[in-house]
Image 1 (cartoon, rainbow, N blue to C red):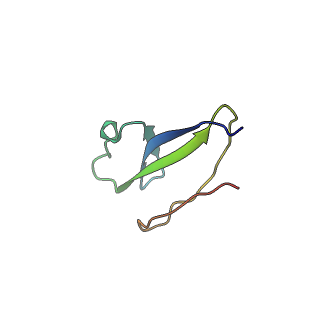
Image 2: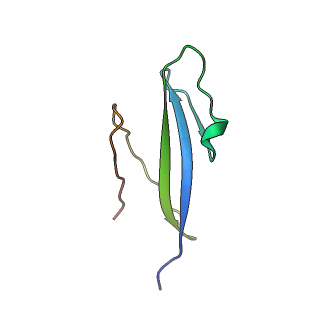
Length: 70
């Protein structure tokens, strides 16, 4: 029996100092004035109820990427 998958979307705003904020809604994140920042949308299909921990690195330039767990 396969576990049900739930799609989770999270927005992350990272500034040039390495500080970050996370939200379910991109409109809730506002970059600090005078600091370079980047917004990243992370979409994960999560099986329930077993938790899995993932670690990823975002490329320096905005390219499409993929994170897979075997």
